[in-house]
Amino acid sequence: MKEKIHPKYQDIKFICACGAEFIAGSTLKEDFKTELCSNCHPFFTGKQKLVDTSGRVDKFQAKRKKAQELAEKKVKKISGDELEEELKDIEEVRKLQTKIEKAEVSETAEAKQESGETEEKKPAKVKKTAGTKKKTSKKTEE
Image (cartoon, rainbow, N blue to C red; front, side, top):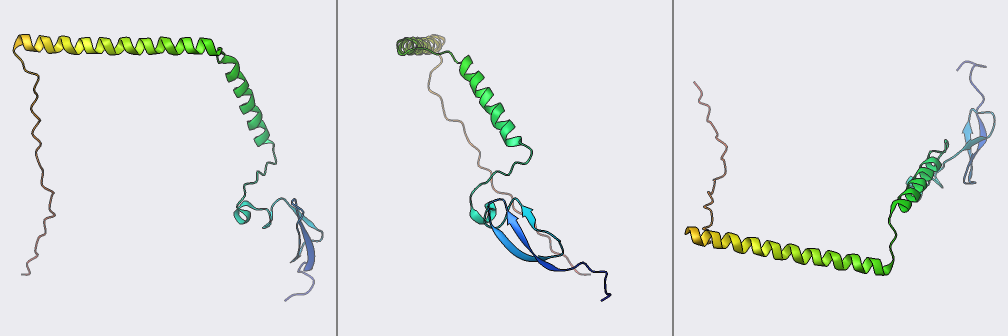
């Protein structure tokens, strides 16, 4: 090894943002500060931790909150009495729809009887297809 070309190897202190301190060998001249270590990294702890250096998470949460507020303003707020009236109207509409459907079914059945057609439907024949077998060929030696 040549002399005076290699940096000095010394013990320095690694300090994490969570407060953990480690002493390790390094060629750095001063203490090293880091944001994550094995005590606070999600892989080792199993807990999620957001590391946001540029404020992206805050921006996203602000946009989300603003969108939620706008959505709440757009929603029509009604009282309990109005809600009950709306539900009654919906039930009446559903009842009318079922009556109409029943009337249409009975009309088509009557029309078929008049024309001589019967309502009995025979089940369609289903062809059973055999599974395809892989063909094997024997090589003949000549």
